[in-house]
Structure formats: C-alpha cells, structure tokens
Image (cartoon, rainbow, N blue to C red; front, side, top):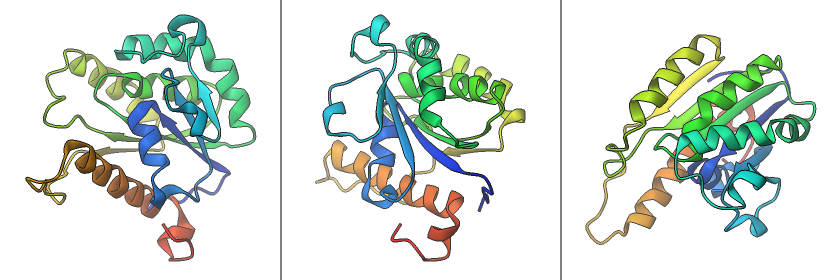
Amino acid sequence: MTTLNKKSLFIGLGGAGISILTSPAAHQLDRLLLNTDTTHSASLNNFLQLGPTLLNGHCAGGYMFGIKAIDESIDEIIDRIGTATAIIIVAGFAGGTGGAAPYLAEKMIAKGLQVSLMLCMPLFFEKEISSYDKRMIQLKKVRPRLESCNLVSDFEGLDRDQRMGLGEYIGNINEATALNICHLYSPACAHGNLPC
C-alpha cells in the first residue's frame, strides 16, 4: 500500500478513469473527474470539461487531442485541485483522453504536486491503436518523477462468461480496479474502516 501523508485527490481522466472512480467501490474517495466528452457529465459530481473550445464537448479521439485539451484547461484543473498535494491519476491507457495521463502528471509535478498514476492497459480489442508506442515513451519519460505508477493489465481473474456482454465485462474490470485503488492508496479502506 502507498501511504499518502498529505491531502490526496483522485483524478479520473477520460471515460475509463471516470468509470472506475464512479464505481461503487470508489464512492468514498475525494475525486475530480476530467474528460473532453460531456455526454454523461450532467450526472457527475465534481466534473470538469477539458478543452471546451478545442473539442466543444466531444470525445478526444486520440491522446494528442487529450494533451491539447489539458493545455487549454490546466489553470482550471489546478484551481479545482485546491489544497490537495498528493494526486492519483486514474485512467485508461487505450488512446483517448486517458492516454494523456503522463502529460497531465508532468504538468502537476511541475506545480510541485506529488503524483501517482494508475493506468489500465488496453484490452484485447484496443491493442492495435497506433499511438500506443508513443504513449509508452511519454510514460517512461515521466515515470522516474512519479510517487508510484501502477499498470493494471492482468484481467485473467475476470473471466468473461460467454453470456456476458462486453459492457458488463468492462464494468467488472472497473469495479476490480476501483477495489485495487482503495487497497493501494486508502489506509482507511485497507484497514477495513471504509466500505471499499
């Protein structure tokens, strides 16, 4: 478990990061939800739209647009972080807005914040995304300055039943990842004091 002695904030970046941090297992965590896509934002608490001028509420469609959207919104992101000094960025790493997580981490480290990453690696149908190598280079560049970096990639424990739809399978992955986050980063959860 990574013990955070400072005030921590969990940032859900992109669709996967938001899905993980809004799953029932993560409901007690302090969080900020960031995405370019505003399709489901009305039902989210503490949501910030990234790149409103650049993308006008649409999905990034690639990590480079995620980077540009972060640049457009960085001042507002820093304002919303408030007094938190330890940041845990949770994101999918398949190629959308979440693919820009290492870039967001770099920006926050430059502001003097402690930053950890929890990245869900691409699923079997996402691995052919052409920007994967570029995103891994970016991750390797920032990794030495991170407090911790957890790459979630082994979903073998979550067997996909033939009757299970893809959405249900991904929901199970999100819930399992949220539980891992609680146990890695939240001392209260790890000691059984919170219902994570």
